[in-house]
Image 1 (cartoon, rainbow, N blue to C red):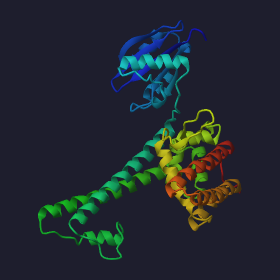
Image 2: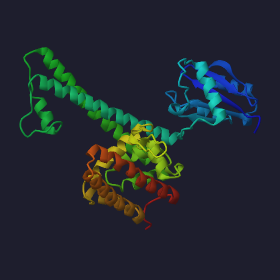
Image 3: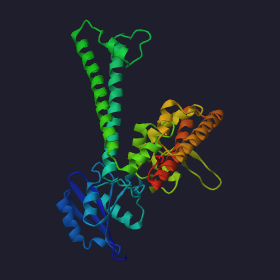
Image 4: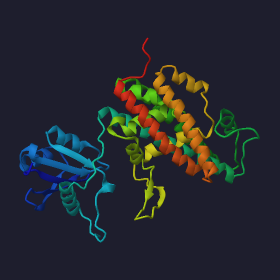
Length: 374
């Protein structure tokens, strides 16, 4: 339509800077409004018929509340990737007003890349998965603090006692110091480690409840992804929470690009150069895929845990998982023979693993389930 108005919003916690790109070519600022539902409703009423409005803003810490408020008013709204917004090389002035003007101008030109907006179920699951991930990081920090403190004081566990096992916790209770300050420090560090364990257990119970109450289609994908070696419950849930609908990617390569696991490239004419992975993608997705890829160093096999996960799945899904084991293990050995170090080889394996994840995810979404009839 020739009378469409493109609006750019620079959204902050308390304010929103607004700019509009008119159909005739003019791009102007409309000022700043409070970040409140009533203010957005008033803005939409002022701008004209909702069918003539196209609004965008950058993804950020404010989440998707503005998106849901605008779509609830019948306005077409898109959340765009901030790292892919065009920036002029010599532009060194950044203000809310200028950011809103740039968004409106780039949106009208079609230079912005929208991101996927999760529905309520996916967003809730993703928040819970990321809370568990944060708890695991805090646990690692707490363990490091306790371990380094004991190392500085020359206290080492008995031979044969592995760190963070039941025997190790029993040994910690026997450690004593001459100074009360050291004793208080030890008790605090031990308490933090125990608190982290309880926190993770609580979040994992909540994760089990969230999976049980998730939509049937989402549960089917989570179960099917666990057919892959290295992809257990938490990894499968993370994949679904971070990716959403796998079928929104037309090809597996698009999912690989979304993860940021593809190599950067600088080619011109007959010269082709490829370097490290871009990392311009979902870091949470890239992390769990990289961790799962380490399982493919070992020769293909189906252990007891993997066999139990396969029982409830269709032959098509388990066949793809078995094919992944053969292909990715052979690929890993080939890369090592060529002189690649293990981390480099695992990065490439993780990228190919995403292809199998995409294939399983799209098949289950298309069929609506993976359980064997009868």
